[in-house]
Length: 256
Image 1 (cartoon, one colour):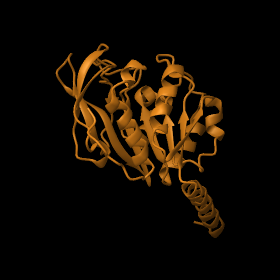
Image 2 (tube, helix red, strand yellow):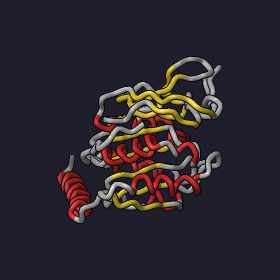
Image 3 (tube, rainbow, N blue to C red):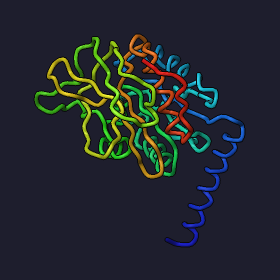
Image 4 (tube, one colour):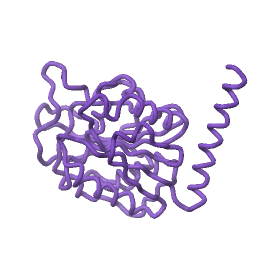
């Protein structure tokens, strides 16, 4: 690597760390929820709920970006975690530059959290998104005999691990869409799963993944406001953000 290129890379890293340190010194970690589009879900109703979940952690300062056209130019270096809460319809918005923006952020140590159908965001750049997140929606050209999810309804969420993120969280019941549409074979740490009432198979609902120096938390729960109501759902997202930010996870009481 040429000396000039190396020096620019070092300087960029120092600036990024400096911004994070400034945020840490203020006593809070900055979180950016990126939303603004999802033809299949009422993001305008669910975004405030997700923001409320995260803001319940006094260590987090939560902001919302609802204009996806701005994502590609958004300076992410002052944030600890980016939360993707959209599923774009057009390949041009937010576009490949936005994907590269968030990939750079996570690769060098930023945290990433995916909410529900965010597993289908950037679907036109399937392989790059999959590499970053560990699992993604298999796309509109689904494999033969597959489906997007079970019919909306009640099911049991099973906690699968002793990971600190899930400490004190017990198996719980919810009313949601049980996603059966994820693909990928990268190593992930499975946190929660459910058994399909349609085919009897077990499907992942929440897991962690690492990309570069960054931490990624993916959860497919949360189709609508009603699906976000179980206390354990909000707790998983809140802890997922804290974990992705590299913060201690406090498990003060059992969550059902």
